[in-house]
Every structure is written in C-alpha cells, then in structure tokens.
Image 1 (cartoon, rainbow over the protein chains, first blue to last red):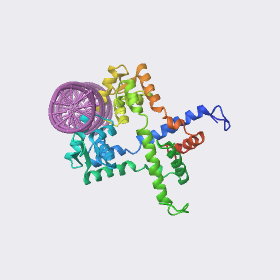
Image 2 (image 1 turned 90 degrees about the vertical axis):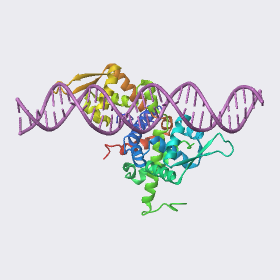
Image 3 (image 1 turned 45 degrees about the horizontal axis):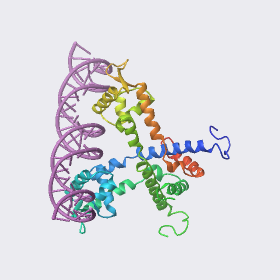
Image 4 (image 1 turned 120 degrees about the horizontal axis):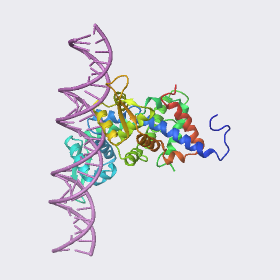
Length: 154
Length: 154
DNA sequence: GGGATTGGTTGTTGTCATATAACCATTATA
DNA sequence: TATAATGGTTATATGACAACAACCAATCCC
C-alpha cells in the first residue's frame, strides 16, 4: 500500500501514470539495452560494423539511390559513399546508374548481400529468453498492448 | 487465418508464443532504439560522450576503484584511465589513493559530477510520450508484466 | 628478501563515425 | 546558352572506442 490505498477513482491517477510509465520504460530499456547483446552478435557474425549492417537491412525492401540511403541512415553523402564503397568491395551490393537520372547511383543488394541482411534481421528479431519464458497469457496481453505503442497504432 | 484458425487448445501454442515474443521484442526494440533519442540528448546536454556519462552514472552508487569501474563499464584498464583523466579534468571526479591498498585509486564524484550524473539519469529515465499516453489500465497491466521480466523476478 | 601478482599509466595502432570543404558530372531553370 | 541546383566522390580532420604491449609501483606469498 505505498501509492494507491484503493483503486483511486480519478484525480491521483496522473502521478501513478507517470510513475508506472517510468518503471515500464526502465524495464524495457534494461531488457533491450543490457540484455543479450544483439548488436555485438550482428557485427561479430557478419564481420562488418553495425552501421553497415543497417545499410544492408535498409536495402532489403528494395534498391535505393545513395541519396535515399543517406536519408534512411540519417547520415551525409560522403559517409554513404564510403559505406557503399565498402559493401561493394565485399560483394554485398552493386552500384548502377539510375536509368532516368544519370546523376543517381542505384544501390542494389547482391544475393550475398541479401543473405547477410537477412541474417542480421534474424539475429535482431530473436527475442531474449525472458520474453519466451513469459506465461502465455501474459505474453498475449503484452503483445496486444505493444501493438498499440507502435508508430502505426492510431 | 494464417496460423491459428481457432483459439488452439494446446499443442500449436508454442509457435504462437514464439511469434508473439518476436512481435513484442520488435516493438520494444523500436520503442527503445528508434524512439526519442535519449542517448543523443545525454551527450548533447552534458557535452561528454555517452560512455563517459555512463561512467559517471556508475559512480552515483558510491566511489569505485578504477579496476571496479573497468569491470562495470566492461572495458579495460587503459581505457578507464583515459576516461577518468578526462572526467577529472572536467572537475567531475577526483582520484585518491585507497587507504588500505596504495596501488588502487579511488574515483569519487565531485558535486559537479554528481549533478551531471543525476542529470543523465533523469534524461534516461524519462519515458517516451507513447508510454505516457497509454490508457491507464493498459499501462498498469504493462507495469505488472514488465516487473516479472526484470532480472530479479524469480 | 625475492619473485610473482595486481592496479594504473603510457603509448601505438586500427576501426568507426561525424563534419567540412572542394570538386565533377548531370540535370533543371532562367 | 548561361547559371544554378542536385547526386556523388574525394580529401582532411577530429573524436571515440577497442585491443595490445610495455612499464612502474605497491602488495602478496613463498
């Protein structure tokens, strides 16, 4: 009985809401950040930096110009140029001129690049044990609530 | 109707569990990683790298020797030496020899360092809007379930 | 006492990411 | 057609972190 002696009909709910949100946030952050380190797993498995792996993953949805890739990685053109250089040398992507605008270079995943990208996705998508071991009913509830937290929820 | 045509009494529940865990994991990762960038906020507010801020935060619980600090940051001694150098120059920590073992240096937060560390904690603890705007009943449920996911849950 | 161990420091090297400026080729526009 | 804007490339500098090797001083242990 530390916070709410009884269900609290209306007004005191605000402080509760903030406190709960903070606790939930802390727990989620702990789970995602200090749990099993998927980031490291990706870099070690693929032998490329996480940032480069991210570039590969962005290309899974389809080819992009370097300009578009820059935007999706939230970085600048020179950086993108270097990253694509590197990925090209590794045989993960190819560069080709855009048919309609010869200024643009279209970056496309090779089969090897697709493999690497999918491997990265698989590693990142693997949930930690704690989630898998949750009681089925609780996980189902969690699933329903988390769906409402996603960007495309409302 | 791809997976479960009807509630699925028993055996197919395993695949559901995995799928749900994956979805929940993806949603949590998205919220923590690609949401409001607290990391950047910390580095920009304090003017030090996130790693250094982490060192400060670790010291909030009390002074540590550099060896202990190394362990908590999961880094090596040379790196710790440099970090403490930097934080010392900024006036955030002091180095003093351990009274019982003169090999050890005890790193202690200064008042300014404590301020900075607490500021970082405050920024990191601030939950994203999505959580605060969740329906109270849902947040309460989330709170209850997340508590069971924490390390010290049985 | 003497050798091994431990805690820190210094220095080197390499990778990664950020930021800028300068430049070239292509396209759009006045 | 002349000029500006856009997409990429090249070059340079900087800062952060990782991984080592080598070293000094204090402590531990035989």
